[in-house]
Length: 359
Image (cartoon, rainbow, N blue to C red):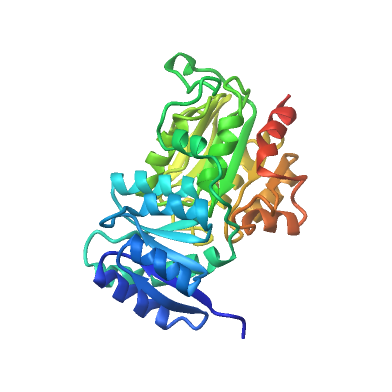
């Protein structure tokens, strides 16, 4: 039997610590080696117990979870799964935590904490297992992190999208990006490096809860030269714009005459996900074909892999993020292993290659 994953639970709520401990007690490959009520106790237990993964509450006394995470990722990088509330503030803080290096997050239920957390047991277990295999890196550039968290961009940074660019025109080229675990930061990096005048629209499916997708789109819009938004049903897809699937709807691309438009639907999850990368990419197979470009970024599982193969068969080019720069090389790895990737690239090279292919 392989070595158990050593888990440390950090949460100021005794009830949450109790419920999480009970969940993982029934999981044979995960051992709760300790719990901590605040970051100061957590710091001492990390030194003494050497856990493989932390679950970390966002809101705690004495030091909030994000401040503790930032310090941790600078001094002792390790896999962290954030536990946050399903609120606007919870979304903003959790996205900031992902910028600092958290692998993933789980949202606390708004009511009935005990029963609600127990209902999330499978998701919690899955994400802790994924985190244990994830690649984490030291937080090395505080200036970049501060800017990503909302400070003013550097003087030579690309200017954010402005209303003056939001005119109507038709695009024949379209880029479809899929991602999951680690994807919020990967998507942000790609979109920040694309030029404002790129002659293609971008559609994106990231596995993310409904309460978080709009905040994610707004954060990326503030940093990217492209105009980035949460997709709306019937919205025209324009060059220089990026459309992120809402967290509780599938995003499809349809043709309306010469135009591409976004279509949202409330059909059941596909590959256990809603939104699903499979659904979005398959719509590109039907409606864009050779005019599309598929990009698969970091993520757990295989959602979208088969449809990327179909898109390649339709004449499109498929790019996959490489293993070294992926937080989890599940989704891009599946595209590569099945022989569907035309090119396997480090994250920092993907935007430049997209521009070259479009030109």
